[in-house]
Figure 1 (cartoon, rainbow, N blue to C red):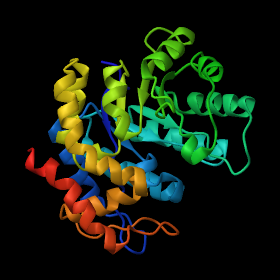
Figure 2 (figure 1 turned 90 degrees about the vertical axis):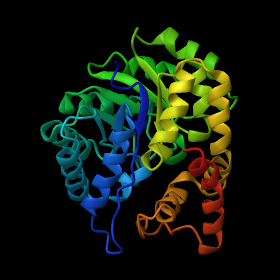
Figure 3 (figure 1 turned 180 degrees about the vertical axis):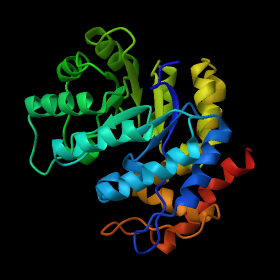
Length: 298
């Protein structure tokens, strides 16, 4: 099976109020994901706020994850950084630590050109020497990958997949056809944006890069498997149980809501890195209500 296929679950990176990693809690999240049977683990993606962590914190997180996973589930590691040198270093470290694949977003303070992004990816892909997924996340990077640029990047050795945002027109099938027409056979086109996962998978998307699977892996996997099997009615039924949570993701952003979900599920207080503030206490009750259909559906 392609490394970038099926359900890729992205756990939070839990830290205390001083920003110190809680390795035991991270490993609890990872054990739940593996027990559920997710196809891969996405470490140090946007769900974990990788951009707010120092390279040293990221390496510490990676080693705690590798020690826990121990080869049982493929591990995809985010290596995006503001400079190419740092991203190359993180990519080499990920390979040496035992990662199976890489995820790279074009982070930058200055707006980047297509040519700058191309050479950034070429350098990092060579440094990591692992299968690499293009992280197309204009919501955070403000950079939009054109089909032409994705086609160019797909020619770089090791670049084997793309993680796409949800299309604005919801034409998943059309977008998939357009990208498949310009990329090599076997190039994996998957999607993030949890509230569109059902439609993306039913349309033939290779992978769901899932925020919610970091804490609710069983439910996310059930949705994934139903959609992969073409069981539209079952996929829609499961998606409806997620609907109240998807509404909160749309309203507040999945990043903040995930911290509230962790606390509601009994994992204790985990706070995002400042300046990001946790979800206001007044809205925590809505998170608990949104979780009820899912917890009752176990």
